[in-house]
Amino acid sequence: MRFFGLVDCNSFYCSCERVFRPDLRGRPVIVLSNNDGCAIAFSKEAKAIGIGTMCEPYFQIKDKIKKYNVAVFSSNYTLYDNMSRRVMEILRDFTPRLEIYSVDEAFLEFDGFDDWDLNEYGARMRREILRLTGIPVGVGISKTKVLSKVANKIAKKKTGVFVMKDEDHIDDVLKTFPVKDIWGIGHASANKLHMLGIKTAYEFKIYKDEKLIQRMLTKTGREIQDELRGISCLSMESPEDKKNIGASRSFGASVYSKQELREALAEFCTLAGEKLRRQQSVCYSVTAFVHTNPFKEELPQYYGVGSRTFSSGTSDTFRLIKGCHEVLDDIFKLGYEYKKAGVLLNHIVPQGQNQLDLFDQQGQDNKKISQVVDLINKKFGQRTIQSASCGINQAWRTVANFRSSKYTTSWKEILRIKLDS
DNA sequence: TCTGGGGTCCTAGGACCC
DNA sequence: TCTGGGGTCCTAGGACCC
Image (cartoon, rainbow, N blue to C red; front, top):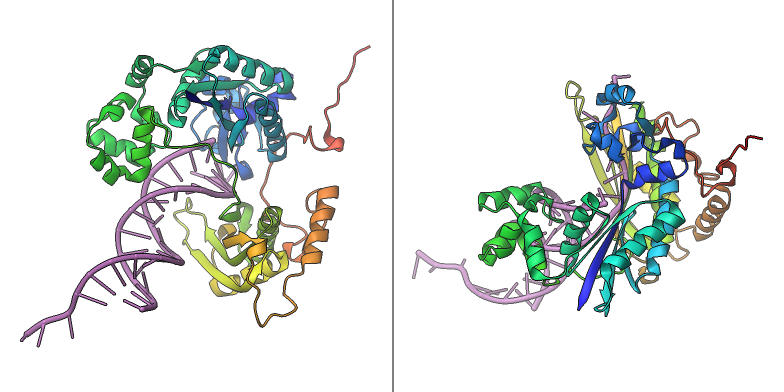
């Protein structure tokens, strides 16, 4: 018998912050999105006082934050990525098959664990992760990935570990589990199922007209139905190279000039190019976009987008920048208040499969420069060296007023402890 | 004043080919 | 009067995830 486990860190970003700030124990904590725009992570104390709606604008909850003395943080992805890596390394000791699903979640496959007490095994995972990282996690175990997700949600409400093995037990749980909370069933699909009179996961599981489900929810929905029935359709996946790479940001201040958009696009090309080179791929085209603030309905709105194709695959930041700047020449319109811009790299293939351009004998990519730039930035920190076209002052740069330290990745920011004598 | 970012998968429909 | 059929590839858009 094969089982799937899902381990999920509780309020991951908040938990990371709290590891290095034990004084925040018991106090509500939230973490804001880029640009300090809205709240994206909440400790259970924050949820308890009614701050827990994903992407609630920060400015709309400021009163509550003050009233309840909520600790507020800007996102510190350097810290979260590093803490995530530590958690995942511990999980590797518990199964030979681990799929890192996101920064705070992983699937585990248990094949040949029939005689094991999976409840106890899950509890051990929790203890070890908490002991070694300070991060609390929930563990759900069942017959398929979708069911393990269900079990994980139950685990969080209960003791932290929940195992569903036999059919009757699973059905009992599914009878009280809303169909809209199933992994993979979003708003649109839940509404469609409601129209069929399906409200619980159990009703979905036993719904007979599979052809109708296929037509309404596509193959994805059909597979979820089978997964609820204990038939595994979704297998463990290994990390693959990204098929799309993007970099975009909202601006910290309003942007009106082409020059500033040129800087921002150059910066995003730098970020995207680094990601592309890290997976040793090249892209054949780049898309750039700029747009106004859709929330400011009283202002004229504009969304400009365009692409450039390269004669050969590239991962050269400077070529990406040049392409995006050409696009900007096409799409820029004066007189708008721009709020966001971004770049997308398309048609990505492994470096080894790059088709060189017949008429481009010496190659337009300056591989050596990119390599050296990457090396310097890795050794001395991000943006130690970069294209001057990214600008110096960068008035448009995302704001982050409540950023914590890079406790685990920077000697300069390591935690200091004062000892009273 | 102030509203995130980065991905994946699936399908329908158009373009194109023989 | 009457104008095929089958296949592949690509892309845009929808839905969903964390």
